[in-house]
Length: 436
Image (spheres, helix red, strand yellow):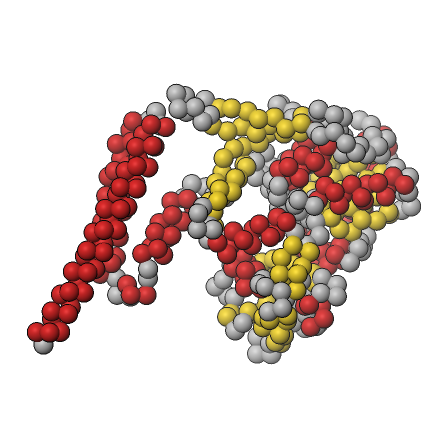
């Protein structure tokens, strides 16, 4: 009994010593950070609270380690990771902490290449719905169809899991396999969770196209859809535009509906195809990094790039909706302000902020809102929280656009369902409207 008590005492002393060492190291590091923070900031009221908050953080850490019932299942690293996430995510809805796996997934998505199963998904009425299946991709070969609802991945049900976590489960090294359980709607559109279908799908390297459905409609009007602004987007769009010019189109419809944005540089490159050289595309405003004047702001102007230029004689309409955000709004707002394009659809999302990805040593990263952007016309309302009201309002349910996605992936349009596209074609046939 005494030996057992002595063993417990020794274990407790080791834990106390370990916690003491961790606390000292953390305080030394945080004090160094605090000193740097104090030098960089001119707001003394904030400085006075920093050490108090550090002390409170250490107090909570000790309470958890001393009293939490399952402390043996939680590492100190996990606790601090949670603290980091909370600190960053309380800033705004777009700033967050990216663990290594999520950061890797974000980089892959930006590059347009990743190991996956070849499906596009979205959350609709609380369910993870497959919007489109890559033709001849692994899911297509397995028998998965657009409209299927993902019920589970590797046996883990998705009822309480968000779309981003589910996407991470679907992705992985090419050659590895994943079990996908789906519910397939019947003829009435109803789901029967008593009769799920299970597929084992082998992941392959997936190339995510950002420019799709390029075609000529009505004999002389080009249509192209940009799904997201990624690194290959501008080059892929240029090929489409060159092809359109060879076919002598006299109208162009660029579809940015449902486009969540992407890379600022990609949006600038796309706008450059339609503007004179050195035209203002977007102004980015951020706080000055001057130690002497933290309240001042600095502006960075992005201008159109030299290179390929699409014919100014071709009239242009951009389709937008409530899910057109960020880089989509930069593109739409810029080309509207320069009177190069007419916007048609519904008001855009209203995300007028810029996020930077900052690498950390352990492979994780911080996504931080660092600036806000403004379109060229200073008299227009700011996009952030307001969105862009199109020149021509043509309502259409977002669910319809999601339904059209599988057709876009296969280079098809549906002029019976897509009333916004039909309206755009009508407007392009009436030149006086565009010459206002």
